[in-house]
Length: 164
Image (tube, rainbow, N blue to C red; front, side, top):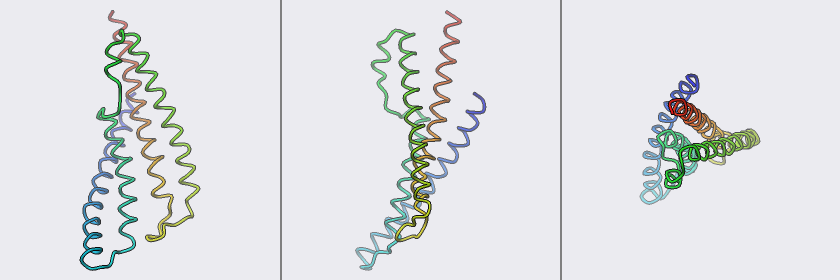
């Protein structure tokens, strides 16, 4: 589990840096876009595209950070009502379902990003694979975070079982 923890630390630092850069882009370009539209009467064609792509990346990278901090949707009320072993099984089942979902998203997201590798965006003329890559990259990072949490839960459950 040590390697997964190290990988996740790296991923989280990368995600945090990506969110900071993306939010800086949004904070600078959106007012510029509003100024261009309402004051100058001319909006640069690349600004809407850049903010959209930055928002996609910020959303996916922010989801990684939120997942690691425990901000994911859960039904803790029901888990707390279940007996200990049953709650552990349900929790592990939830992790397994999440891993399958994220694995599918990584697979098909990568396929979609590669499919759009040679298509360029209309205004910025960058490969559309760049914005599309936010999904498989973000989901791959969430996959490793979820895997770490699942293993942590699994090993914690075994330790508790030994003491009892």
